[in-house]
Length: 231
Image (cartoon, rainbow, N blue to C red; front, side):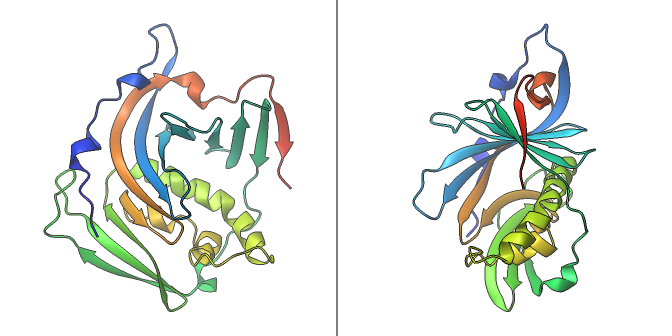
């Protein structure tokens, strides 16, 4: 199941270099190849994490417009849409979920024969939710901890919305939804996420770098955009 990602892990990020005159900030960079299970087109997802912010967006040819910002201090998600010049706000959850409300276990196995990443052996984690196999991820413990923590924080900010969806007629059959609702960020708790194999999508890490200097404006809400609060 393990897919080698060595050839792309250390590609240079020259296209992220900020202009000399711009105010820059240090950010950790992750790029994932995402392949939806519903025959939708695959795409590259870039995640940039600074001390106070997270930015997530599609990149490359045919990338969807817009991006998501996450303000880590305010625990506020901002969905930026350049086409409508609007920003959709999702506030933090009003209560902290308890993982006692979801039945899951994790079966882990070190992949001794797999290529190491940062000198460490990847570990495969198989998640069983409500007694049924749900998804599998491969991670390297202790790597890119700040970026993984920020992704977990954003997942926690979305948890209440997932709990609302679970209670609706449109909840669907996603076996991961209970974890997203009551134990958010589990997939980021095992270390640097190398690959994720789920019922809805497959994600594969193709690139990561630490402490890249990028244009600080990438983490700012665009001026003049209309703010809309998601109900």
